[in-house]
Amino acid sequence: MSSFANAGAGAIIRDIAAVIVENRAYLSEIDGKIGDGDHGVNMAKGFGRAAERIGDDASLGEAMATLSDVLMSEIGGSMGPLYGMFFLEMSETIEDLGAIDADTFAAMLRAGLDGVASVGSAKVGDKTMMDALVPAVAAAEAGHPDMAVLLRHVAEAAEAGRDSTEDMVAKIGRSSRLGERSRGVLDAGATSCAMILRGLCDGAAARLDA
Image (tube, rainbow, N blue to C red):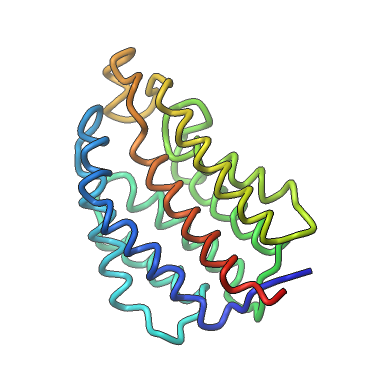
């Protein structure tokens, strides 16, 4: 079974941060249509700060822990604690591992999902990040003998989940007050979650040993 080294893979988180920062305006734009409009700004601030503190030799677990610390201690709004717990639980799952294989990757994502669920009440269908995260975890746990294929399935599941939020009515948070008027817009949390998972999967795939 193929795997990738935990050591040095912290660069994956820096690459994800670059994508979030690059999409700051887009994430705030779609959030502004049904929410506070600050999702991109807050996410870019948190991920950008964390990226500056992640060394070249950081492991993936160390980089996730750094990101979690920044998100939970320095970023406001609902997404700081949610993503903070997501990355904290994932970091603790892999912190002592030398290599990350398909089973470990799935366990890592499951731990992240459980972390998000522990601080939020959203479920699939509520038009939140859970609509991208839950199907991604399911794809990881479904398994595949080729880890590269598995990683692609995970990213694609997250993106399909993101796309599904466009036709949903929001049931959680400020956007839930809009009722039917929240339909027709992608959820910003699901969108950023899909970006993160795509970056995580692509970064892992590029490091697979065989």
